[in-house]
Length: 131
Image (cartoon, rainbow, N blue to C red; front, side, top):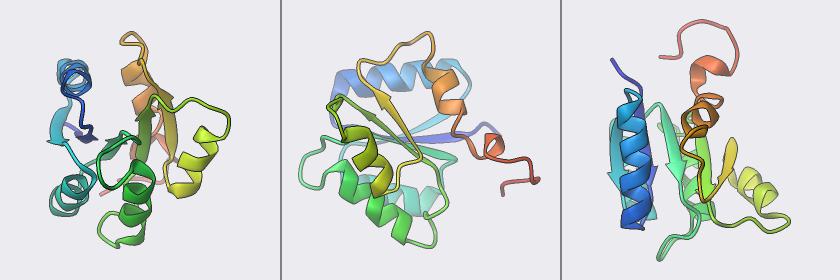
């Protein structure tokens, strides 16, 4: 079974690009266009990893990350912030909210999948099966 990636992104162009790159690399992609939808979909589908935009309508990505980490069913899923927020302190703020990684937009299509794979459960220790 291919790893399942949940992309939480409200911008259609960004969603298309991320999904295209991930699917071309063999990932199953689930899409959510709001934080609320992302939390619900993550709870229901238990993705391998979550790619989370920070600048979302309504509930921002920081709050989404905090809520996902607080839930038993999603608390151990790695979350990578994929965001245009690139000011001093933004990376730290994302990590404090519960993200395990941080990638600045615009993404580099050549290195994006490798950056994501650094945060996959099988790359965070060698203690056996992650399921």
